[in-house]
Each structure stands twice: as C-alpha cells, then as structure tokens.
Length: 124
Image 1 (cartoon, one colour):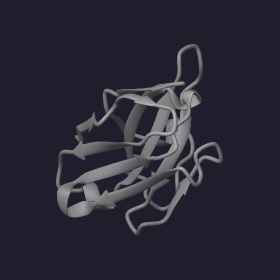
Image 2 (cartoon, rainbow, N blue to C red):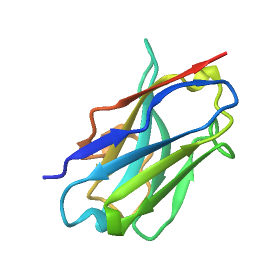
Image 3 (spheres, one colour):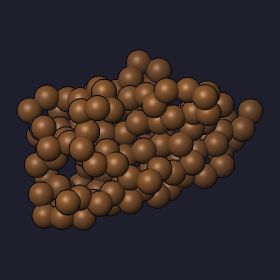
Image 4 (cartoon, helix red, strand yellow):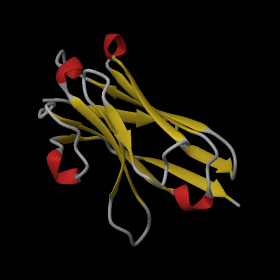
C-alpha cells in the first residue's frame, strides 16, 4: 500500500508561483509512475503532468512552459512547480501513483493510488 500526502496549496495572485509537494510512503516510490491531476468545480478531473522513474515526463498543453514536475526518489517526494499562475488554474490538485511505470499515464484510471488533494486558488 502507498499513501500520498500533498502540501503547498494556497491562495495566490495571478502571475504568482506555488510549489506543490507530494510525499509518498513505502520503499518502492522510485519504481512508480507519478502524476498530478486537477479538478475544478463542476469539471472533470484532468491530467496536469506525469513523470516516470527514469525522469521521462510530460505535461498538459494548458500548463506547458509554466508548470514543471520533478521528483526526488531519496525523499520519496514528487513536486509540481507552478509559475505564471492564471485564474483558470484554480482547482484541487491531486497527486497520484501508478505501478505501471513502463509508459506515461494521461488518464486518471491508469493510477492506483491517490492523495487527498490540495486546493490552489488563483485570484485575478
């Protein structure tokens, strides 16, 4: 079993930055595919970014160039650096882990474990 705990959310003005962290329990973190998703009110949960254990990563077109995913396997932690935030980035952000590390996962259904979510609110 893997437990994920997100932190770092909050209220920020448009144009500002936040860094989300997701701490994972367990000794197999380094072998997991890690992802970030977000869900705004009355919208479907959507892919934000993902990173395989070998460092291969990708992000959604809507955040590309502004958000960066990274991981520190020694600390069992994955990060999401969010710059140039926009009001439309407002959502609950979720960290997720998948045992299927052979490819990047873009669908929430490809992930096995989820954190509780952290709220990000961007004011205009």
